[in-house]
Length: 89
Image (spheres, rainbow, N blue to C red):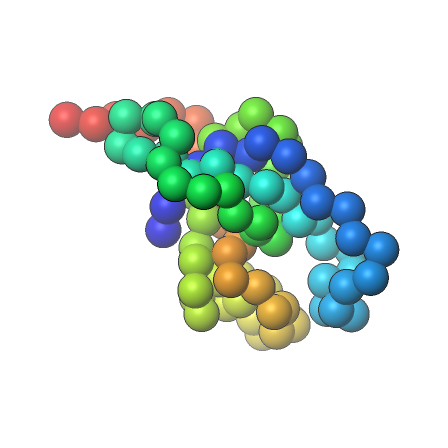
């Protein structure tokens, strides 16, 4: 899993049927100190996150398991939580 910040939303008029009704958001990955880390990614939102919120995401094969067993969604990144606080020792 990886921490990120929602920086935008994707609007697609044509998409896979299993993505109908699902929100796609642009995520800026964050490092352990909360700074930007790497390039932005598009994630399917599973929790109702909004622009400016910190989130944690699943990437790779596991990203589609968020929707299982109801659906198999073709995604490489899914938002699985909204982060309230981060503690680093």
